[in-house]
Length: 281
Image (cartoon, rainbow, N blue to C red; front, side):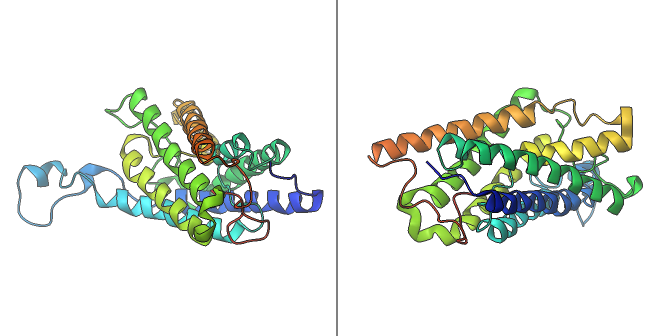
């Protein structure tokens, strides 16, 4: 089991989680606010025809790649920047998975959760000051929501799978004792996992895989747009899906460790104050 930090170190870790979550919302969700993700606005460059007139010029519009990169790269930067202080969770679903596997003490996990939630709120409020309502292309401060034509089951299963991929990357690259030799590259693997999850889920629900990321922008959207905002309409999906996904990944990790006949935590766990501490995102 991971040892609980001293009050001084825990304070520093909570501050790191708060700041990382704030920056994640500002730069990742902020990128979404400046991009027109409407498929109908994308037309082909030459001539006319069915695809040009409907705007359906690609099965994977460029805005999806742009946003996926923004979220993946932002997480990579923040994990590298805070892993030696807090472990670089930046996601309450990841914190939950680390608690389940014994890589994060419960008290520490609770403190991280509130720090992340506060960071998400502050980041979203900063976005309200950066982007006036008329310039917000998402019309929701980058909050998540079920897109037209998709069903609740599509989004829920997608969130479970996306978070499973992320949590698996965290546990196997940043926590597994047998992956100590690649520990410094863990944030890159985590960033790629976030990128891939967004590539699949952006057209469906805007991709959460991070309940804390969804919460702040939803509150800000409700404040700005009032009754017009549907930011909380499907909010349960962005909590239940990631929690289930992280829990399943934690279970699979424990099964692998049991089959390897070694503890779920141990000599390979990241040391405090190293570039890739316990686990990330």
